[in-house]
Length: 425
Ligand code: SDX
Image 1: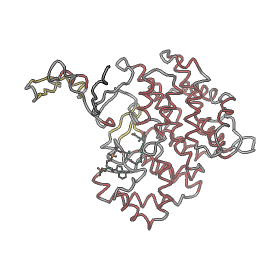
Image 2 (image 1 turned 180 degrees about the horizontal axis):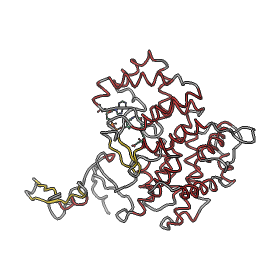
Image 3 (image 1 turned 90 degrees about the vertical axis):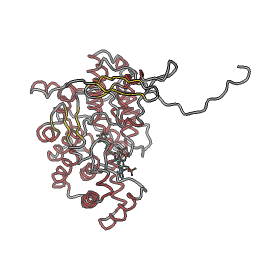
C-alpha cells in the first residue's frame, strides 16, 4: 500500500513528524522523537492494562473479536475440536504443524514416558493442608518442579527447551490429579502409559481399587474437546505473565507457575469456578431478573460474561454448549444448565449487555460440564490450566526465538511528589 506513514503535528511546537507504519501500526518508540526541547524525554504511549498495545508479533493464535473467530496456526477452532485429539492440537501449537501419523505416535509415546513425577513431589504435595485449594497446589508444585530440573535454566538451548516442554505438558495432568486426590484424602494414582492423554488423566483422578480404570469414551472425547478449546488464546493475562516473566530468562517451571497464578484470578481462568457459585446463588430461574438488576446496578459482574477481545459470542462457548448435551447423556442433565440458558437468554436481550457487547465467554458453560462429569468446583481452573500449559509454552518459545524481544520493562508517568533534598545532603 502506498505511503505507509502517519504525519503527526505537535501543536506545542508546530513541528510535523512522519511516523512509519509497521503492519498498519506505529512503533511506540517512534513517538520519542516528538519533544518540546532537548530536556524533554519525548512522547510515550499511555495504555493502562494494554487495551490497545501489541507486545509482540505472533503466528500461534488469531482472534477476530468482532466476528467471534478463533484459529490456532490458521485452523478454525471448530474444525480442530471436531476432528483432532488434544495432543494433535498441542503439537500444532508447539511445533507449528499438525503431526503426521509417525510424528503423533512419537509425540504421544514421549508424553506417556514423561507423565510420572519424582516421588518427592508427592512428599511436597502431602505438606498441603487437607482443604488446600487445588489451584494453589498446582501453582506451587509447578514452581517446585524447578528444583528437580536445574538444567532447565538453560532456556536458550533449544534441546533443553524441548525436553522441559515435554516434561511440563506430560506432568501437568499428573500434578493436577494428585492435587485432586489430596483434596479428597485419596491415595495418588500413578499414570497409566497404556492410556491416552485425557483417558490417563481420568484414570489418575477417578481410579479406585480396580486394577484398571474403565474410561468412558464419551467423557474422554468431551475432555479432549474442552482441552482443545482452552489450549491457547493469544495475549491473555496468563500468557502475558508467561511472556513477561519469561523475558528475564528464568526456567519454564517458575515461569509457568507465574502464568498459572495469573490464570487463577476470578476475572480470568477463575471465572469458571465463580460461574457455578453464581448459579448456586441465583438458585432458580425465577430469581434471575432480580440478580440481573443487581448486576446492572454495578453490585457485581455476571461471571462467564464479557470479554476484552470478543464483542460477539465466544466461539468456544458455543462448542462447549453443544458438548454439554453429549456429557449429560452419560452423566444426567445438570439442572444448573436451565438457569444458565435462561440467564443467557435474558442477558442477550437486555440493553445493558447488548450495548456493552457482553456475550457468554468460554467460562460460562464449561463449569456446568465439569460439574456434571464429577469434578469439584475448585478443580475447574486447574482443568483450564492443564491445556493452557501448551499455549503458555508455545508463546514462551516464540518469545525466546523472537530477535525483537528483550526483558520486559514498561515505562510509567510519574505523578508523585518532588521533595527538596534534605538539608545537609
Ligand atoms: C477468560 O483474555 C482472554 O483471552 C481470556 C480468556 C482466555 O482464554 O485466556 O478468554 C479466558 O479470562 C475469559 C473471561 C473470564 N472472566 C469473566 O467471565 C469475569 C467476568 N467478565 C469481566 O469481568 C470482563 O468482561 C472481562 C474481565 C472479561 C473483560 O473486562 P474488560 O475488557 O476490562 O471490560 P471492562 O471491565 O472495561 O467492562 C466494559 C463495560 C463496563 O461497564 P461500564 O463501566 O462501561 O458501564 O462492561 C461492563 C463493565 O462494567 N462489564 C460487565 C461485565 N464485563 C464487563 N458488566 C457485567 N458483567 C460482566 N461480566
